[in-house]
Image (cartoon, rainbow over all chains, first blue to last red):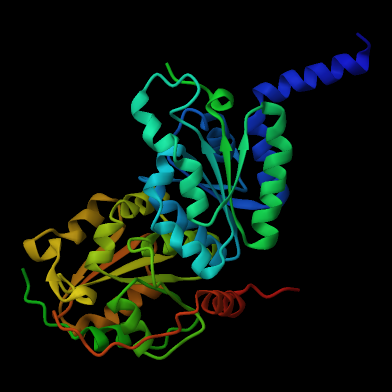
Length: 182
Length: 194
């Protein structure tokens, strides 16, 4: 293996471990200043990166339902905001999401999936299996990421679409990527 | 409990008198009508859906604009539906945010059915437990100026529980165009560019 190939392979190995860092990189690139979340295993590294970032205000929520209001308020104040949640949290948000298309607020959500690959808890299936459809019905464009190497381009594109076009964008991180539960 | 006799329209008018560059969020239902009844203003953001979101809109705005004062005026029913957001505000401790609950103990928009506060649930106690720095209950019009001063000058998250009369004054509808209201608000409140 030549050195270039080795470097590429290492980069791929790194990106596999560090996909949350790629999301954080894009938050920085597009100037996300507020990040709302409910604590989550799949998002734990990204949450720590946001907490440690002096340019990002991290807002821990009691329910994902609080997120749409936070995003709207941030936008009114001239700041970009993103939300991190599990697929179960999407169900908590439905009526609150109405705020976003009613006023054309941009919204970027990173959703870690439950109830699919390797989830020990079948009770997660009813919500996990309808999450993408629910988001679409609520006016979100949805993009699903299965592999770590796709996080960077998909999240990058999603950030641009959300904030340059005032669109609602949800990126679903497959449970096989975000970590299965035992 | 102190008898609730505050006239909500007069109380809100006194709260928003000489408002300067105060940013105002009107919660779904009667509080939005109360805010609109004071006269439409480009620094008003009226909420027409998503019941329970008003306090969080205020938090996102207050965090984004630490240079400005933010007041959320909402009702007891709306605040109850988003009661967890009081805890979220308590965690962030914004220095420039006041939540004013116009508590008439009823759901005015749907026909004046009693709310949880009618049964004695006390949102001021909830706010204290959620680490609001200033928590005030008011049922006398003479204290409106004091409440106005709190909104403009308090340091730390502020919660004003105004016990208003359970009436349903004539509705004053501001614009229903969320896009227009948003852009007007953003333009009127934008930081000056060099």
